[in-house]
Length: 370
Ligand SMILES: [Zn+2]
Image 1 (cartoon, rainbow, N blue to C red):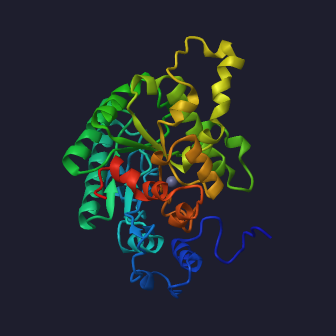
Image 2 (cartoon, rainbow, N blue to C red):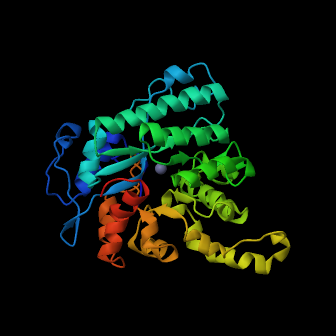
């Protein structure tokens, strides 16, 4: 039996406490802790080494909540913003999980739920969130960096918010969704944002959201299997990145640094088909003038390591480069129990590759001292 919904550790998304317990159970057993959070808070930090050298590990894909109920109450975002019960989660419980997993630094991001906001509300919300992220980074020195939140529905404002967050609050790059109210990220309207990201040499982290609706597959992914997530999310990323390639965003901004969650979804595993599309269906490629083959654009992109198996990671690295992959945990969602072991146990990677993926790459891209 692979899965039974009444299984005692809970459904597909166990509670946070069950998640932490599972982490402990799944670890090597050196620490016999089984009574939950109180003990976990005292868990020693797992020090990760490669070839006997300590590596500072950096998680590029870590969600966080900031309670914004006072700002969104009575607005179009009231329901999207997590509601009054959403708790800030930048504290001891998160640090305990990081210590257990061997994650030294998390790059925090907030999934964009504010693209329906008007300009006034968007300003207030983003100012508040970015300040809170900066506060958390200051409160736990060396453990967090934060991606700026930006109101991408107003591209000029988003560019300004990213610049302010980086220059005045010490935040790094920006985290964005993979479409904006149905509009592709490759729309020329967003060029001011991409121009600013390139000018600032800022890493932009892409994460899917409401992906079944966003991709139009809602009616096809009903029923069991969490299909709206396991198909929807990688599909949303695939569509967004494909437009950035074929609508020439990467040609207009050749030095963009984009990192996509979940290993980039389906795209890196099947990009070779894109190399052939315009040969087979030339009528669908009129006025197209790409500088490179689609598979070569993939090599310019960055991805997290959330591809589950050593073979998946080997393939992702083969289609990109070891310098373009970074650890992603998806905290607090239990997609992985040992994100560091996933890298260490992938035998196709050299020690230098492992060191780069575990933290070296993110250290360079996010200006985190090694
Ligand atoms: Zn995620």
